[in-house]
Image (cartoon, rainbow, N blue to C red):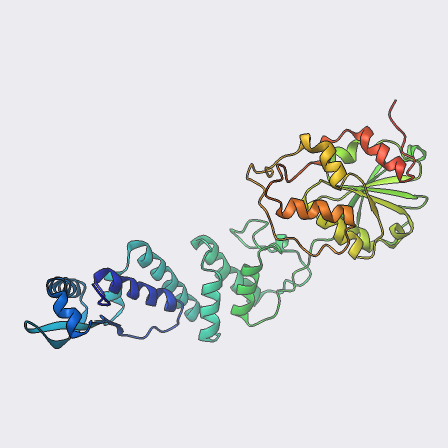
Length: 388
């Protein structure tokens, strides 16, 4: 039918209207939909279709409880055609929406009503919080409300998210990564931040010099650190994987730092003593590892790298993988500026991020024989002792 809406088009427009306004604190009724009648020539050229469509709209409107307006037209004989459909109230719109849309709508309205009754904040804030947390499961949304009341009545300054004594919460529920939950709680309370403490930055390292045989070889320090744990060290090897960390051989005046993920780029810059040493970073050949290397240099820590360029990739690509730890495919990604990378490292980074023809997007460092890594360290002047 030319221009004239049918039942499906009217239903879709009602659905779109509700979807666009479902987070409004107060919905406005009625919802009015124009049917869009064609001109006289088109009406007469499609007389049978017009009659059938008009009857279908009337039948549907009566069934749902919608009101409609008609206009007088002549199609051979005078007829009354539906020109507008009016959805008068919430009960009527729920008859029109699909079951999944009804469930979504009721969930949102229930949350809006609940927050409006519990917290003295503006309607705009209530709407924003419900929209922000719409993907939270019902249990988690309930916990957001519970947590907001707890923070409203208790001083949590100085404790970490895992230390908040809330019943029914997992230890990671309010971690720093849960930014929407934290922001929602803050907005409900009208505050800028929860003042929770971050977990102290931790650095794990082991002495590689045989001169330290009489002391504990592995140490964990909490930052900031001003002690003498690194006294006498000249060489620092920073690795990403624990297997490599544990198998690193003797290096006179050397230490090995294990920096899982981005922890190393957060920790190493905070230890001023390390800046006077020869630092070598060796991570996985993947986009994450190269971004960590770049972040380390951008933080002001000068360091070399080994086995993190195209030459190394080509040599060891048979050890590569296209899967994450969870068995999902490593996706292409938008490259970051990575201002700290050198040209050979940047070339590999760009290929790992955006070259769809590249077979593997990760070569884990522990797959590379440690003796090969020691050869690379020797080229940089690090006196690693090769195993016999």
